[in-house]
Image 1 (tube, helix red, strand yellow):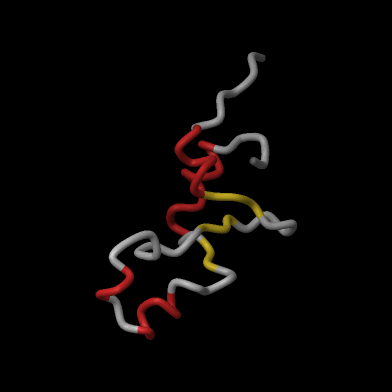
Image 2: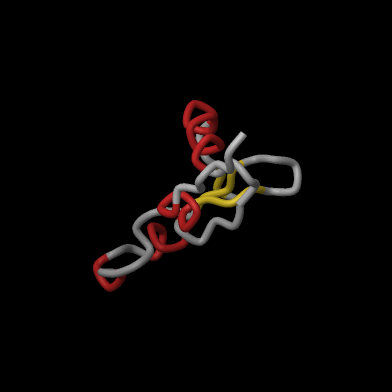
Length: 67
């Protein structure tokens, strides 16, 4: 069986935890931060943001080797 290709876009956005959950980064933290409230910026600072269970199967298909 041939090797599977990793989706490079997914590789940059997601990673796996030791238990196999899919970790992701929070959105809206890159630019235009001067216009955002402190509360909005703080919510982007969450350490453990996990991918939704409904998306997890597709993400794992794009990252076949555990990233």
